[in-house]
Amino acid sequence: MSAAEFSIKLRVYIEDTDAGGIVYYVNYLKFMERARTEFMRSLGFGKDYIFNHDLMFVVRDVAIRYRAPALLDDELEAAATLAEARGATLVLRQAIRRGRELLASAEVTIACVDRAGVRPRRLPRDMLDTLRAAQIH
Image 1 (cartoon, rainbow, N blue to C red):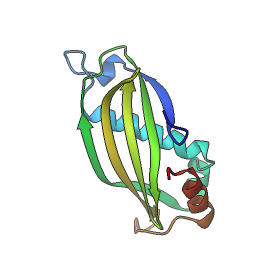
Image 2 (tube, one colour):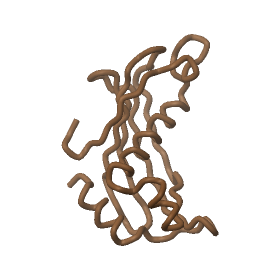
Image 3 (cartoon, rainbow, N blue to C red):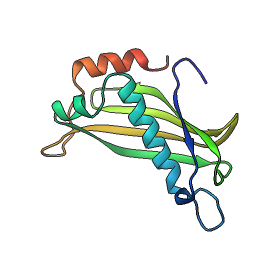
Image 4 (cartoon, one colour):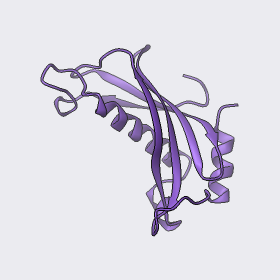
């Protein structure tokens, strides 16, 4: 894990798996969503900030690669690294690991939109400045 990487621990529950006890593919995206949410919260941009600024974030693009399966009761780490912060978009590199083993990796582009019209809008200046300071260089 690099200094710019944020991560959270997760446990795989039966609800996360298919009949064979393997994590269902879409749940990796849910694990990544949790890491992104907690990353933003750690920077001071929790739900109160988002709602008070009439913002929403939507996933614009995802490119994911599955490398190995996670299994029932595994302890996982979901990580997020901010690769780019532009006017209205964020690009994050994300990973799901079991110990040192990389199970899935993704590049996720998030767009900032206004709540009322769900149209693209620029990130607030304080948010953009904080995010740019947190991104990898």
